[in-house]
Image 1 (cartoon, rainbow, N blue to C red):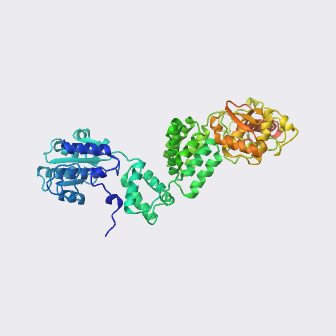
Image 2 (cartoon, rainbow, N blue to C red; image 1 turned 60 degrees about the horizontal axis):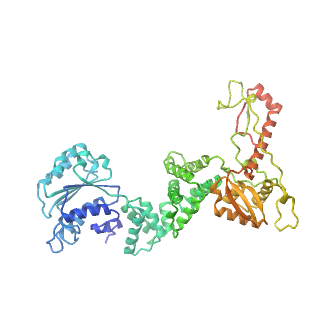
Image 3 (cartoon, one colour; image 1 turned 90 degrees about the vertical axis):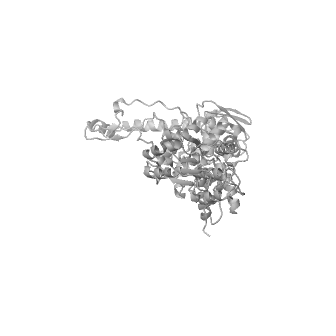
Length: 579
């Protein structure tokens, strides 16, 4: 016996078996019970939501005679009488299905309408079902208008289409229209569980969740994917195998991407995208997973009561929702949603994925430090970061000399580039005092120079020690670098941070634990306010000072001066680095 695919084997045979279309079932059932029957029905909706199935059930309801042969029009066809069995088998003479995609001309429609003058041979009603009716030509629509408006009492029209916008208004006005909706993933998942239990196929809940999401509202697609997954998994459905079959990105990758974007860590973003490439995941799937994650985060930010405590995915969403402000969540959601259209435009979809994700770092609000795409280098002993590890301010002068053959032929494309005579001295950087050595790990009896140093110097020395020993990473490292120590009391330190996203409880607890391991067993209190003297600001000021010194040294060089004077050289911003 040949195998029957799940989508055909479990096609609903009556209205009670219909899933996800209660609004249509209720309207048709009530009409059949009261026998207030329209002469033409139009079912619209995307693929695989049950348009043809509803048409066949309606035909059975109109022609069912019951198990004893004495039944009438009913909303619950028996499925046992000759009319029901023959409609299910596709050989009922009074039920005609016409595929308008391949029979779209006026001749085919006229041949169908010629049968309308004859009364039913076996059943109570003739039913003409025209699938994909929007594919008919204009002449074919015109040919059926009169019969569609005033058909014989024994004739019912059922039209189905996935694109009702292409159906003429003259046809729409003659039909009773029902819109079959795409089915939500939980409804699809519940139906798949019933089907697999009937088939005695072992499955994992995570695998069904992926199949339901991949069906995109179509029950037929869900059952077809389930057939494929059963074959792929050798008779069982495991989440890992289904994810591999669908090419779906694991939720963990999306979590890492959002967490890295929240911390402004471009290096982690690039590394995660590279991992997706190596594992063969589709870039579009990564953005799709992130869109779903960000949508749930936005819901939890606006309505915290929506949190499902027993759902591990909701717990991850709640944790990330505390890292990003609501406005940045909305921005990232919009960028990921619209970025899917850009993947096909780029020669490499992973390069496009990188650009979509890094775009958020470019649009971060003022005052939020952005990490370099290179790995962040540790602070040196003086508490000053290297120039390559800290992004330079936009106003920092950075120059290079490009000789040209004549003043008229400049290799600089930017017309706003200043001549050497018009260069203004950069703003003087903030003085960076040399911090003292970090506190010793053990308890000290007498106060050390570090203990008596001013609060900003003391905090910079502590943070330098934590960073050098890699005792703090990711969001905790950002909190330490961008915080200002404003009060230092026995057993309690007060830090001031400008970004509320950095002041979440987990980052504070990890920083407090790192300080305790370094010999500072204190409790941290955080306040949200503009910070004016943080280790990150000091590192940026030091880098700017070194860059300004390099710039001044370059302009005083006799060779450079001769190149500028004799060859019409230009100063190109952005190409000078302090060694």
